[in-house]
Image 1 (cartoon, one colour):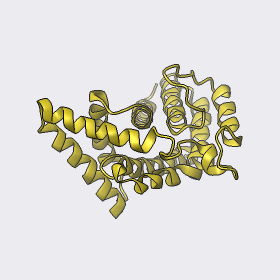
Image 2 (cartoon, rainbow, N blue to C red; image 1 turned 90 degrees about the vertical axis):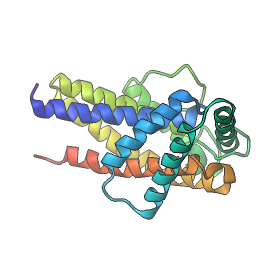
Image 3 (cartoon, rainbow, N blue to C red; image 1 turned 60 degrees about the vertical axis):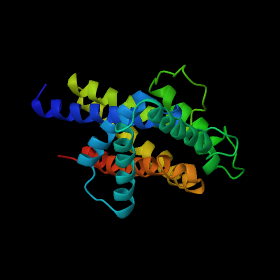
Image 4 (cartoon, rainbow, N blue to C red; image 1 turned 30 degrees about the horizontal axis):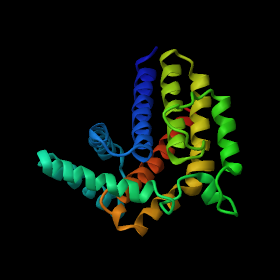
Length: 230
């Protein structure tokens, strides 16, 4: 394997880690592991993002401030701080009137779950043999599952490149590019915007959503460059 292919494999491995982290953020409540992931995500996003608008700068600053505040706490103060963030998570993502979390809701006329979008992504998961995560029972077009698919495909792309299979790697890159265009880009902006309706979303989940949108934009551009002929 050439050093160039090795470098591209490392980039896709980094993409895998970022998508895996974003998937985790919206699937499970905040804990110590999440805060560690969040710190690593901030460091990576800071390097990746070249075009920074006001929304990104504000979101980045808020998440960084939250981590800094938390780092200064201990004992009961830390426990109280973490409990507040957990309550925020519950308010915006876990209640019956929380932010809707599936593509079907945003793309179906009836605003229902388990619609065409779910069937479409399920077919793609099966085609590329993405393992089912038994730690949850969310629908296949749930935000975290769609992000987990991109994590899985990025990991497989890195593996293919390390094995010298550039043709198959290109196929996997194309699938990821199309998945972002035809699925995530259809609804994630609305999903993120929903956090603005709740004061509990202001501290972490709306800023986190803005960082996700920015990463999706940057990643889509990266995938396009990968598909351009030499």
